Structure formats: C-alpha cells, structure tokens
Length: 220
Figure 1 (cartoon, rainbow, N blue to C red):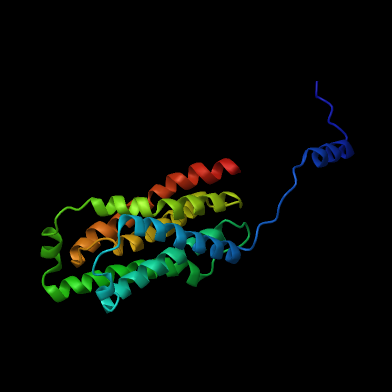
Figure 2 (tube, rainbow, N blue to C red):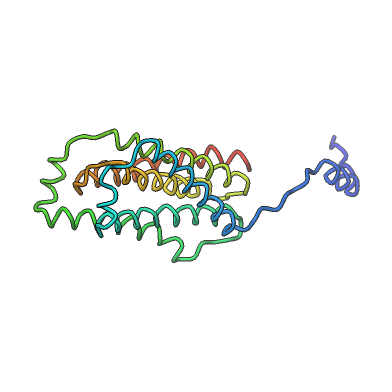
C-alpha cells in the first residue's frame, strides 16, 4: 500500500519553516583580498619568529632572489584565486586564471634549472645536494595560517569540484610557506632550492586532493 504524500502547500510551508537564514558571501575577489591580507600577516609573523636570514638586505638587491620570490608569490596568489573562483557554483575560471598557477610554477622551476646550468651539470648539482628536511618543516609551519584560513573561507561557499579546489588551496598555502622559507633559509644553491623548496610544494600539494574531498564534500 502506497503511503500518502503530504499536500504540496504543506511541504512548502514546512520547508520554509525549517529553512535556516542564508548570509550572502562577499564576491570571490573580495574574499581573495581578505585572505591575501591574512596570509601576508600570518606567514610574515611566523617567518619573523623563525628568524630571517642575516644577509637578507644583500639578497634583496639580487635579481635571482627577487625573481624566485616573485614567481613563488604569484603562484600563491593565483592558486588561491582559482580556489575562490571554483568555490562558487556557476563561475568557471577563464583560461588565463587556470593557466597562471602552472605558468608561475614552471617559471620558478625554469629559473632554478637555468641557474644550475650556469654553474655546470644540473644533474650532478642535484645529486650532490645534501639532505635538508628542515626546509620542508619550515614550509609546513609557515603555511599553517594561510592554509587553515583559506580552507575555512572556502568551506563557507559551495565548491562543487572538491578535489581540484583542495589542490588549488593547498598549492596556494604551501607556496606562501615556500616564500617565507626563502627569507629564512640561508642556502642559496639552486639544487637545494629545487629539491627542498620547489619539490616539497609539488609533493605536498597532492594532500589537497584528500583534504578537499574530505572537507568540501561533507558540506554537500
């Protein structure tokens, strides 16, 4: 025997009565600007607490140092911007927005590879690079505040592509950590920066797949 359905007006009245008020979120651009401010302040404080390198003033006049910092900063901002765009259903990032994080990542890698080629054999430089896991820990510690704030802000929206949103968010936060680490780490060898700054960002970004799936899918 089929159960009788409630009349449509009664269903509508019940849904309206049980519905919770919805607070409209600011635009993705506004939220991206708010996050950028929080990330700069949070990552900057942690970087200063770890202690900036003693020769920072000298390196601020070094074009190679400034280029690496620029590419890393653009990577962080572009990845976070794409995550905010992806968190709004119906908004699709344009081709430039989707390509910019990849372009910044490739530019960072090319810069380090070119520096190794200028020294000699890049492969030999990589093989001779000593282990330095402290930089990985630095990247993780500096990226905590940008990462937690970014995932919290994205949770307030409704990301449909949970995995890719998580990847972009993790990449943005970890790039912030790598940028701060550049101002703390006093090892300038490009092989070191490739293996212990760039590669950890790429590897740890894969964690964003799981974080995005677990964090954003529960909201739906």
